[in-house]
Image 1 (cartoon, rainbow, N blue to C red):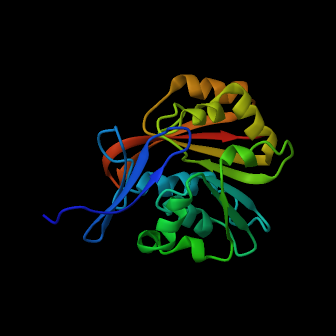
Image 2 (cartoon, rainbow, N blue to C red):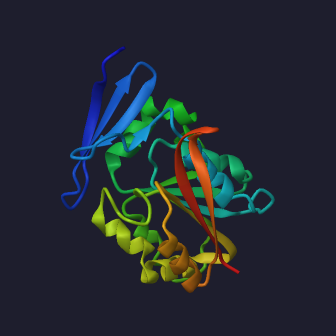
Image 3 (spheres, helix red, strand yellow):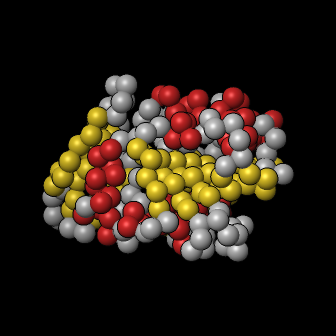
Length: 225
């Protein structure tokens, strides 16, 4: 088996650790120092794709739809969101770590068919929370895959996004009938309760990392009435 070759690394702000970007043949991996296993692998993206499909299912016939993707990752969620909306829409992706954007503009981009090159895609380099505090209805869908789920892993400040205050800010930022979709490595009953307490119509879906096989991930859905 071919060995992994490290292509780059990036420091997560506030001492969140170091991301390491590697390649083996046509396979890519992003790992976090101090954590066993991978954060992302270019062959395991089904749940990231479904995140966008579920979150944007109501937008295909909506002109000028506005979608926010929290976390670029390997580009699969962004690519699926762009596919789910029409040509008159815009998808903004917020990525905290500039190097991740560079990796997607380089060799990693081919995995998701270079979604950053789509003219409907807009990149915000910075914390997604900056775009969730506008206090007015702005987005028709908000897709969050900024960490391991409602419990922050790579960046402890991410937990505040999923707090009661954070969910209220998201609720206020969504347009009527807007959808919040959150990727999680596993279930979290208390997070579903927080969604309902914030005013969302809440639901969950279990999705495999690969179609029909692989790890089971959870997609939390919250619709604004």
